Length: 309
Image (cartoon, rainbow, N blue to C red; front, side, top):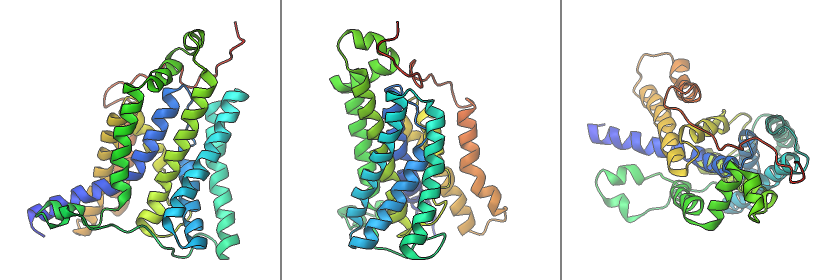
């Protein structure tokens, strides 16, 4: 491959690797902007990945699978919201429980549906579609093989930014996340806003899981999310709880993943395990604060009690 082809390969791989992270990071941004910590994104992605494959298996339609993934994500996030908002449960523990439950439940259901442990049978996936860009030199090398999930993720980034920073609803979300009691005193329903944002986080993370299963490999296997929900949380923090910032952080993580794939493709003599570790090392650096200090919404992770004096 010549130089430009290599660059196009890296850009295309970065877009594909970053896409599941973008969905989950946007979901985390909505949830935590409203003051609810959601470390259950990993579990929600697992559920979304599994549900999309299961629905595609029974219906033959991967797009119905995506809807199923979104619905399952909303259902699990609704459970997290109910425990965190209604019963003021510890949000971290609730998220951990969701992660553990999702992994166990999907492992059980694989056996029930396909009669084998570990992975599903292949299903219909969502293929890339040709666009006018494919005929443009260099650009075409990037867009060929890109699924609609990538374009939809970029659209969601714009919509999320507009909603959070350009609409009255977004202003209420940020007010609830920063000072819920003050927001309550001016008539904002804190509970309602938090429920909406947490359930929205489930919708987005569920689609992120579907982008892995029916968008990349056309099947499901245990552990296929490989910690992407946690990486998305790191991207959200790195991006300072803003949609565009989170997207840029996801591109960074996607790029490190693309580089390790590129080096393996070229047979560079570096231990494969070390190369695969690269995105996670970047995640640790981001969480450790080596790449700039981030300040969370003031009420993030703090349950709100309207009757508390």
